[in-house]
Amino acid sequence: MSDVMLNLDAVDKFYGPIDKGVHAVRNLSMTVTRGEIIALLGSSGCGKTSTLRMVAGFEAVSRGRISIGGREIHTLPPVQRNVAMAFEGYSLYPTVTVRDNIAFALKRGNFSAVDVAAKVDEVAEMLEISAILDKYPSSISGGQQQRASLARALIRDADLYLLDEPMGQLEPQLRTLLRGRIKAYIKERGLTAILVTHDQTEANALADRIAVMEDGELQQFASPEDIKKSPANLFTGTFVGEPPMNVFPARTSISETTVSLRLDGDVELSYPVDAFSAELRTRLTEMGEVVLGVRPYAVQRRETGSPATVVANQWLGDQSHIAANFAAGSLVLVEHDRTQLVEDQQIAVHLEPSDLHIFNPKTGMAISHGARLVG
Ligand SMILES: Nc1ncnc2c1ncn2[C@@H]1O[C@H](COP(=O)(O)OP(=O)(O)O)[C@@H](O)[C@H]1O
Ligand SMILES: [Mg+2]
Image (cartoon, rainbow, N blue to C red; front, top):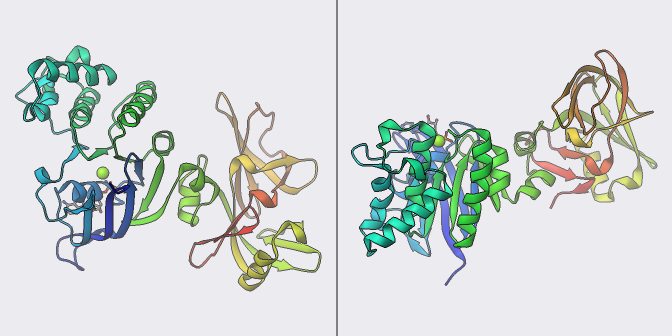
């Protein structure tokens, strides 16, 4: 048995004529391993739902191939794909109870009534909907309908579980609780799942790997740690991470002793030459102009450093977010203590070479992370 559960090979989706209509998914290739939880993360309209619907068979593939468990399925009808999907819009049957909605997928199989009831009770308890099993969809809240729809997908015995924004309607506390339970449910059973979300916290908490999408294109497909530490490009660098990465255009100048990064507004960051690898120094010299990125948590406030002026200081209950004018632009830094800084106060900041992300300004691709050349 191969380790690959799902393979998408150069998949395109056009709504309308090929090469003329809306290009919702662009040349998407990815492989999902058996037992993995994948998050498809991206902003609204980036092609997440279109991707899931093509895998499930509710939308035709415009170009490319999809296989599940080594079997090419992209031309098969949905019922022949053995995929369970929880839809963004719930799509429960209005004329039957929540219990029957959830049980529906099982009844067609070979389970006794007692087995079906036990399975429904188990998944309902996990998702905190036991109390509404005998109600009809129209009489329960959006969040309850959403969990009923999720239960209906999870209860099935499928090769692949596709969950489209399954917790979007829930209160934050319930969402946090269920995140943990859903992950445990999937992992204990060794299921393979793709979760669509625009919420990076959810993606980080649930997924083994995150596929970051933007404008129909896969930007990066890696573990949450790798996406944070080694963003493939400026898009993932600034999209994943809260607050977002600070970015500045910079001009490079490298001497025998010093690596200097000059930012607008007369800010010069100077480092001893051996803080950067020789390959990276060569590359920076060639580039001349780069984009510098540094995460808010990595910005250090010191006695001496580059000058910045505080614009705002917000205490969020467990950390301070400080916004400052810096290098003809602005900078956000995060500190874990309640910081006593006021508007217009002058501070000095230091950026460690090991915390710098450097990008190609023309292509947006990462050149280095932590003063080491990418690739
Ligand atoms: N049935 C459709 N007909 C035409 N355009 C569509 C249709 N469904 C989605 N789109 C367009 O395709 C793009 C991707 O949509 P979608 O896959 O729903 O994104 P997401 O789930 O990431 O929000 C959007 O521009 C959307 O407007
Ligand atoms: Mg969607």
